[in-house]
Structure formats: structure tokens, C-alpha cells
Image 1 (tube, rainbow, N blue to C red):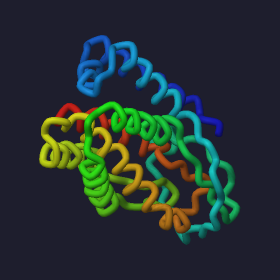
Image 2 (tube, rainbow, N blue to C red; image 1 turned 180 degrees about the vertical axis):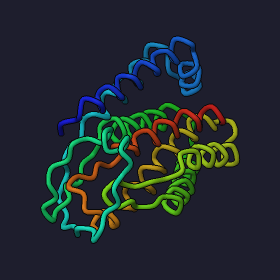
Image 3 (tube, helix red, strand yellow; image 1 turned 180 degrees about the horizontal axis):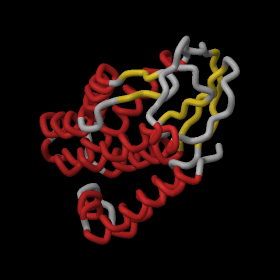
Length: 220
């Protein structure tokens, strides 16, 4: 889908900040706790940020037009991507950077770390529940959620369940927990939001998932 120039500028600015953080060693050190080399960490960051521009359509669902959708603030209106007209259907899509990359990287961590599957499932389930109950559908905008709730809970849960493997467990539980709780379990609410496209792991959720993974690993 086309993005406004301001959205592209904002993403380029975010990418520039991330590159600065990598040079300072913050995110590289964080991802090193997950077993990534500096080059691998840079690759993951670049793929995540650039992949956030790509939504892969999955299927369509019938949706309702809200009676009076709220008007977002001027700044949010400028930064939002251009949407096609709402025609009574919502296209459910998967965002590459905010959904596909975290899933693939979480599978990599599961396969390359001695994590009991029960610990992994328990961490994902707890963070999913917290994400679901702390998120709210915002008609015409998307799913809103306090940005620090998931990473704090993911780090705490990982430290309680498996302190020795808390870093990878915090990333897996945090990112997949947000995807499940704030996106997949909220699909039923998409019908009432009156939006032509809803991307799993897209838009603001990408920022939440990215920050969740990084902060959860730092705290763990």
C-alpha cells in the first residue's frame, strides 16, 4: 500500500536512530544476549524496519462502519498511511517486519537454545493474556496498548520461569505474546473498527513489538 512522504521520512528517521544506537553498542549488546553477532544484529534491524513497510494480504472479513469514528490528532493524520476507501470489508494482512520477522526469529531462538517447550508456551500464554486485557480497539485507528506493559511483564515472567534462559524467553514471550494477545485475539474487534486494511503486526503494533523485544531482553 502507498505511504505518504511523511511516513517514509519518519521511518527513515527511525532507521537512522537505530543505526546510531547500533554504533553506540546498545542494541548490539542487547541482541548479543540472544546469540547474535554485530553483523547479524544489524541485518535483523534492517530487515525489521524495512519489512514494516510491507503488508501481505491474507483474507477478507465483513466489517461494520462505525457510527462516528473519532478524528485522530493532526499529527497522527499526517503520519498514517493512505488507506483505500472502506467498502464494508476489511482485508487482514500480515506485516513482514512486525509479524513475520519476530515469528521467524523466535523459532530460531527456540531451536538454538535449551528452552523447555512448557516454559515457552507458559511465557507466551501469560504475556498474551496481559496484552489482550491491556489493549483496546480504537475505531478508525487500530489497536492501542500501553507500550511498556508487555516488555515489563515479559521480562518478569521470563525471570520467574527460567532465570538461566531469561533473555531468549523474554523475547519470545514478549513478541509472540503481543502478536497473539493484541492482534490475533483482537481480530473479532476489527469488524467494528471500519478500517479497509488491518495488518497483523503492522502500523503502531510494529513499534510495540520491536520495543517489547528489545526492552524485555535488556530487563531480563
